[in-house]
Length: 461
Ligand code: PM9
Image 1 (cartoon, helix red, strand yellow):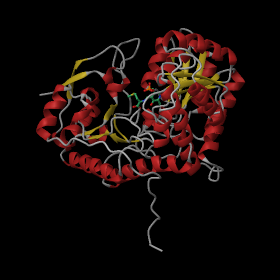
Image 2 (cartoon, rainbow, N blue to C red):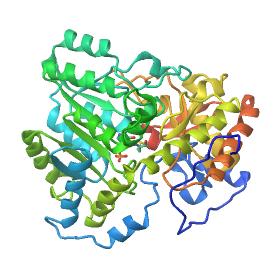
Image 3 (cartoon, rainbow, N blue to C red):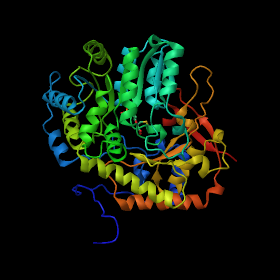
Image 4 (cartoon, rainbow, N blue to C red):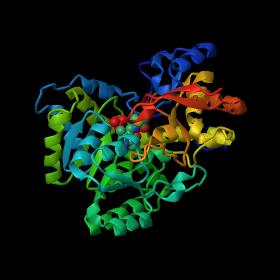
């Protein structure tokens, strides 16, 4: 037997390929300048390896593509809706389903239905679109994640956990009637893809039930969370990801979902719940903002791809490959001495821009600089997850200054091979060697909402 660990390989083979364009650095210098040093504003055709996001960038299987041909595009009562409903009921365990065009559509409906002005919404670190919809509905977001989640170098198996003390203090201070609900994101995207343990979720559910507070799961990448529970939490080693996932959902009252992640599709989302009254309200709202309650802004074919995506996403070998591919990439960078968020999360490797560009103060947007520089030297596209993403305080208008100043190298599902990740890792290492040359940025244009998508910058002298 060889004297090293048995390797694993992707549980699929490649049937269709899309050529990549290779450009030179002079070309990219021009393009990133034109894009205002914002990687969201680059044209995809100018990108070599696209690690901007894992959202909607999945490669669908032949089974999903075949399902697209079975799209029932009737305005009302599409058979694909009923297929999707059946899969959500059996895999997630919720009774009622409202499809939406993507995750933020679900967040919009839920926030409007559940938040009264000036109520608090607790959550384990913010997510950009989630918090914005809560604020637009009049809510006040309160972060109740454990402190360690804000420190990139602390190693804990479940760094996305809710700090029970913080949550109980909030309930005591404000009173349960002032709390609209608690959102549990599992894993926590902005913390580096850090998972939440089953024990923590169970405790959150028990406390919430005692006080009559609803628990809303952001189930966007919950399959990854379930896999990490299987690997790390006592008592779950012999359970399937499907079983763990369903148990986790059972501790929540409702879920919002961006199907563009876990569910291996290019577009789609839903909100699901157990309470008939909430379902009725969601159905009232969906027809205003998304479409009829049996399509919610999606084509029948998209719902079919999503239903089939659920079947594939819960398979142990698929989710193992997904998380382990990210771990391979992260370990490579960590071993090379690159400052990354530890432990490596389920969907992405996060560079710690504070330590990467120690000489650039947060107000000069070090993570924004790092994402732009990485594109310039290599054609690899990443995303800022720091002060730009954190936006401004809704009341004072000041910048929010998050503790985490990160660049996310996100791995799309079933899209890139190990060789692509090796090339991306090499580019990061090259950049790290000349890190002292980097300069900060000035903010030149800032949109009102979710500024990271469209803001423009210029280089400081
Ligand atoms: N996440 C991501 O790249 C896409 C847009 S933000 C740059 O990580 C969670 C945990 C998400 C998420 C999107 C949404 C919104 C909700 N919750 O993008 O509207 O990671 O489908 O979902 C993105 P939609």
